Length: 106
Ligand SMILES: [Zn+2]
Image 1 (cartoon, rainbow, N blue to C red):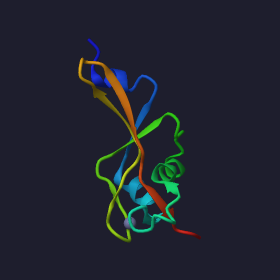
Image 2: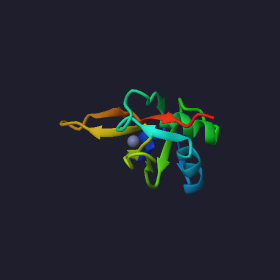
Image 3: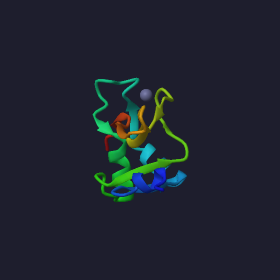
């Protein structure tokens, strides 16, 4: 019998992000889609890609805690795949988009 994780990781790689790496990515966040929707044009995932050097097409980031927007303290999350079981036992995947942020310039 296949477990949830067997299915989930078939084509995708999960990368655990430690606190230091998360902090490094978070340091580039100026504000988020909650407090500055007009300026937030970068996915938080992109900042993690830059810090970790991972390929965004095949990488899921696993955060032990969400990052926080320095301006409004809203949680800043990465995009992720989430497997759900529909009625009837059919499996489906939802792609949950990450938080959009604006970055610190300079
Ligand atoms: Zn914010």
